[in-house]
Amino acid sequence: MSAAQLTVAVIGAGGKMGMRVSANLQKSGHTVFYAENSPAGQERVRAEGREVTGTDDAVKDADVVILAVPDIVLGVVSEGVVPQLKSGAILLTLDPAAAYAGLLARREDVVQAVAHPCHPSVFLERTTKEEWADTFGGQGAPQNVVAAIDEDVAEAVRARAEAVIRVIYAPVIDVHWVTVKQLAVLEPTLVETVACMIGTLLNEALHETVHTVGVPEEAAKAMLFGHVQIALTNALRGSNPFSEACEIAIQYGRDTLIKDDWKKIFDDSELDKVIARMLKLQAVRH
Image 1: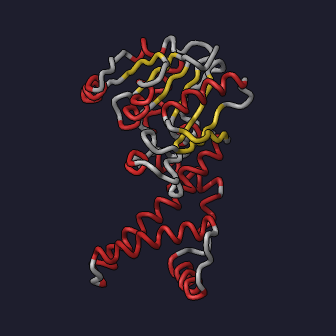
Image 2: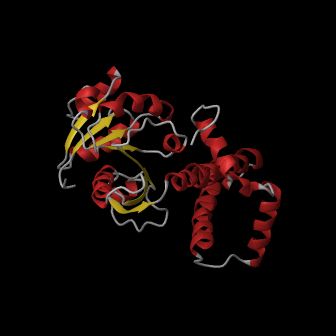
Image 3: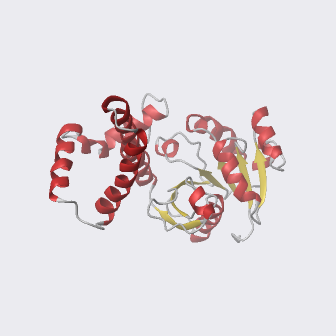
């Protein structure tokens, strides 16, 4: 089967991610069915000129079925969907947690894939207003995607999965293929446990600078936002060396703020723990 034109079903088409991926699919050459249970979600789908189809009808002939539903219900939803899929269909989820935790219903003749957007890079060379306006990705700014798929699938099957992945997250620079576990290490561990946590810490530090120390807010934001840029490019790209005085302040910050054993978050047991907590499970099962 060619990846040029596929039949795609979006389950949860009226949710946040469902609306995002549907907007791009609507502009593609694929045949797309949009399924949504909630009345409010159905209204959102119809407001964009898309027809709502019942889940059973949407998935029965689909080459790719996208589960754009919250992580905590992916297991239940997959149990209802997977038995109805045609042989050779691809079940595509948008986050690795449920797949890593073993929550998704499986069939030997149904392929499972996961694809998560990287979002437009902080180092992206933006040249248009549309690129500057798109901080999330999937609209004007190009982004990378990291994806995983069942082992030993035929190259043509992976090509079909990638064709849909490139549409739903377009414009896409590249799709990087990894294992489900590696994708789970990337998110949550690398980008949520570390990067997003640091983002919230920066916000708290800004609040303290303004409301406790008394620095004018605009001055504090100007200094912080510019130095976040230089901190990232120096640390991650080696654009310029930090000054000797800055290195001393960096070490003071590490000694004061960071636990000596912080790298334990990369242990398998810690990954299992945080994903179980995210999915409200007693434990993950592999």
